Length: 546
Image (cartoon, rainbow, N blue to C red; front, side):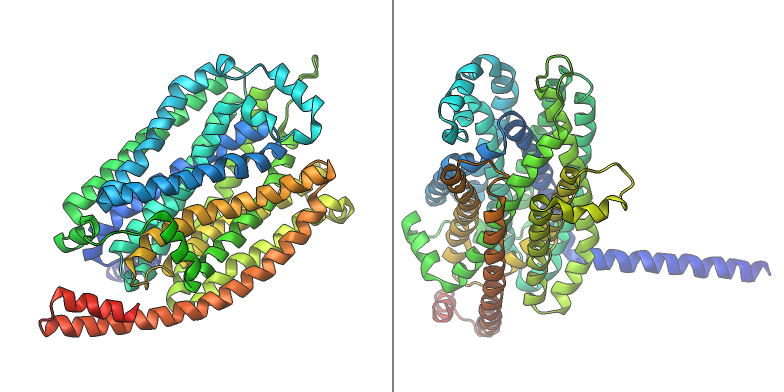
């Protein structure tokens, strides 16, 4: 009997062990020999997303809490967009001056330095660095149609923080990390690595949300606590930024093979095209044009919904002093950050749950299936958010099902949160990995590097700024508020949704053809190398294919 019992326990242990092994293989389908490359790259993804989530939440708390939703519509096209173009010019210049390895350092260090300057000098001294707020309010009263403009100047240090935070999301993730990954990860590896990178990144996203939530709850207890908690969070961001640089250095020095490192760090002997030529390459490439269209559809749609939704969140989380009737900005900002952090935590958990499914879809089904899931979720939820906002009676039947006392405003806020969670979780689990997969089969290194820089940085900022410019135009035209232009935004979102599905269908055909061409080139190049072909002959073969 004891023998049978031990046998049964052993059998149960074996089944549990096999289940855990299968689960790890599903979540991280990485070969043992690949771990030395995968682990540091996953750590880089973790840090980039952790830092982005922290600064993104904080910059929204500053601008939405102190200035209002309408200001974002001016800030993005008038400040963030020019800054993104300046960065692309800067990136193009340093790409011609430094090796590809050193370009990473030159691009990351300015963000780390700005976070240090803002945390230790600008933020503690905003009371005398910012213009007199009474004068700013007087300007707004005198020129109400220019209301979105004046607070950008009146809160200029916050505007700078907002701009650098926005750029970090685009530069850190889309340009620096993914461009590095696309250079050292093969097509077969990308199908296994990329979704796993996203899974690790979302663990960082979740932990960052937890940290912001805890510190914001402490800050909401009294007015003076916010500055201390803000400094604590930014210290973590700064230290992780420095750690990111160290990991990248160690990965290049100790992990990558000599052959790969030479490919990454060696400057091309031929002259490199200028930034203008890079943009010409993008706009003359139908393939890159479709990728930019995907980015445009996603970013413009999320911006058209998010500004209105965050404006409603601000109104919901505001705390007004019962005696003076004045909004307590510090506590309201902390409440806003706490609400955003809770939303981001749910988003991260759902993203983590989605990643095994995303990995399975990427390996088992065509690219078009994975790429279509994000708009399938985003488009209907975006339309429902505006429907709840514009037609409150639609939400009345749902009030009885909620365990809390709910108002039409709360239901609209919750529907917006649902849209935000769905759009962001599918972005990290599906949209980003499927988009990055389309770069891998490209044989032209210029399309992979500068072309990608133009598409991801400038294209991303143009699309986000497009949403802001459209809303700013509608605000000027109607003289209304963010809520007043909501019906027009609903119609624009419907059109963008249709355009998105068309772009996916077109890019799917181009991607399939590019993968086939890459496979033919790899097979032919491998045969030539075995037969002793020179490097020049291999380059001639590559030129024939692209």
